[in-house]
Image 1 (cartoon, rainbow over the protein chains, first blue to last red):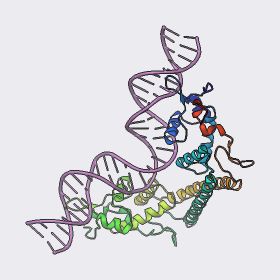
Image 2 (cartoon, rainbow over the protein chains, first blue to last red):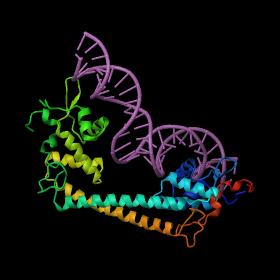
Image 3 (cartoon, rainbow over the protein chains, first blue to last red):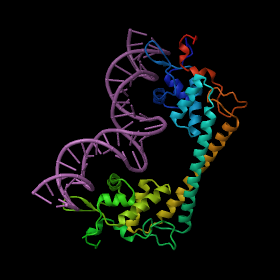
Length: 150
Length: 150
DNA sequence: GCTAAACCCGTACCCAGGTACGGAATGCAA
DNA sequence: TTGCATTCCGTACCTGGGTACGGGTTTAGC
């Protein structure tokens, strides 16, 4: 039985993850509990290394560990699973949203650079694009209760 | 002195943040410690509400609280501060990088959808774009040590 | 003057995705 | 068989940006 088993260190080394991560993934349901040696040490089937690569790939695609766990689980159960495609579509929409947000932010940052803004609160640039940049008093926010000489 | 002071609840309410957040920002150095009533209650200058809006704006631009704190601090000290522009530029590069990452991910997700992938580990689609999707054995990863009858 | 609301403080908890610690037990090679 | 490396387990810690709790004051309105 599983004479070709790999030990935690071997799996972790080949997959490029931390040994602790294997235990963590087991707790999270990404890896099923492997066989054990008589002494209680884990013995993984060699495919586990590849499975870890799959998990990393899915993570890179933006799936959370919970999502990856569910996807693997439906795979394990051989349910018909239109799941992956539907989830990939949903993720695609999520990512488009993020990209749009970042583009909007990018635009605003470009304005800040172009306008030569020099302060969040006391910007001297003409027609400053920073919202509310006219807050000279705020630089001292709270110190106002003290005498004004430095 | 500071007869126009606002209490924590008023500031939080007007700025749309939690009262606890004010204490948190004070600890993090985003808000300077305000004057106190005789009983020890905080009394904020009204501009604080606007400052909080500035902080939120900077956050939306992708700056961390530490970065915002530093930007406010250099502002408070009236240093010449070419800081904001330089930081905005750096943040711009950061954001471009993120956008590129997301676009690459987006492309891969599109392939997954287009290929009609149906599993992370047992995909039946032709020329599957999922890396390593040929892991039938992995569905049972670890159960291998047990008798093979269902 | 009384009461209820607001406020004080320190500390613990939340999310994700792990990483680190420490003492005991096991595994493997010479 | 010795001895060092590896693994075991539970639990605590990390980053970032807050939020919640609980017991004790202070403030404001009537």
